Image 1 (tube, rainbow, N blue to C red):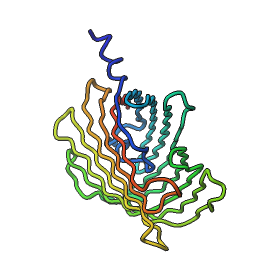
Image 2 (tube, one colour):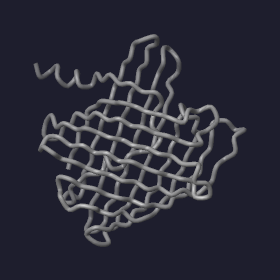
Image 3 (cartoon, rainbow, N blue to C red):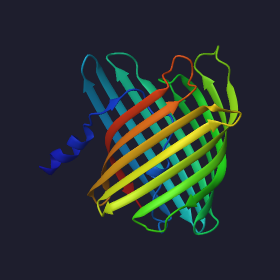
Image 4 (spheres, rainbow, N blue to C red):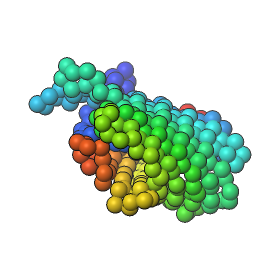
Length: 252
């Protein structure tokens, strides 16, 4: 019977309108500060059949290194989608983040991110940011964080007639990590990213994930992601959302 369980988990049915644009670092950040090296790898394979056939593959790799007061985090997120017999449409995010512990409740964060998304018509989006991260609670089973960062954004559209955007944004996020039972985790993060020179140009993103431990290092995860962009690239909808299920293997 066991030989059929894992293949069943890898056959995931998911629903999505368009894919998310903001990577949720909190859902991939390890809570343990004891292991120097840790990480995880996940794979989702989705097949939807209604008026059209949609095939989707999502892969995520995370590596984290802790050393004294320093934390280094790298994320590589890749997604391929195919509708009917058309060519694959892809998106990807590469994210690097550094944390420096200042006090028990305060850390300094620096991050860099590159991104492309054919569905959202983003040829390239580069981000570079810095700011403080505050720990709002001490309970290991119920953790709350607040981050306030300043970031520079460089964005190029696939449409060459659209001007390249180079601006500064604020990036404020609130995150909670809840562990009500030993085998259950709930992680929710909300981002608010306004353009500094024009606050009416903003993005809001939320991702909420429910994880259920299947084995010691194997997790079944369901995630819902919602994104709103007040000023998206021309022709792209303001609202984006996605519901996914998948398997996560972690190590430390």
